[in-house]
Image 1 (cartoon, helix red, strand yellow):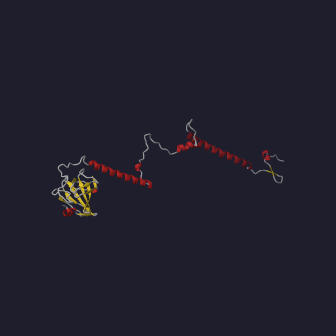
Image 2 (cartoon, helix red, strand yellow):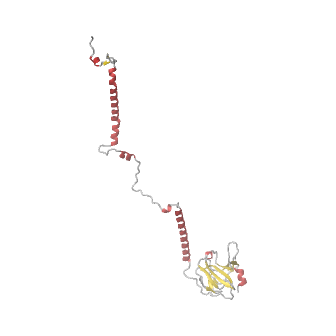
Image 3 (cartoon, helix red, strand yellow):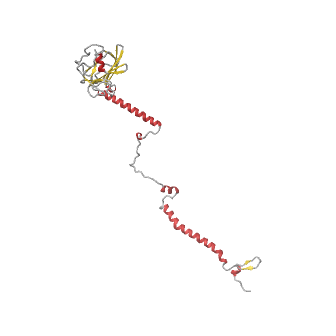
Length: 281
């Protein structure tokens, strides 16, 4: 019997039939390869962590004594921000720069515009009153009643005027322009009731309107473009034929001193020059 190697003896394996067998050459080393390989891989991973992760952590953590790095701090460091100088101020918004976008705002804008228009009209009227003379013109030396007789008379004395444009000129002119120097006395053409007397009546400027009854026929006479402050009669007063009522002027829609004289009968307009020639006494 030959002597056996102790190592081979320890490695003997009993076969299924009870016979003693010997492991194949080198098989005893295979069981030791896998644990060694696993230990080598783990060592390599640890070396990588030590070489890369730890320096990065130290850089993020800052110097010694600094606040620890947290998720909130990293988010804050990476957040977008803006620095505003202390001199900066917020621009104010003016309401007048806004535009109306709702029905209510549109109606309010319309009301504001209407109020502004009314205010402008009031201001214009006040300016017109301010432009009037402080006192009425002097009537010294004027006859308070025109000479003559009859129910119908000329509003200006003969020889004090020249005949101008009459009605029917195609520009809406409804009266007779009696050209005369400013301040020429004006007399009521007929007796009647003053139905209008103001410093401004439309394009007539300073104007007086008189309603008369001539033998049962209603006749209205109008005297326009008179001098500011020259009116001697007021609305509601009674006047006599030939009574002094004012002075020739150049107010309203006028381009020269003259009396604009109108005559309305039965709601219609007549030519004052022809009517006076046929009816004045």
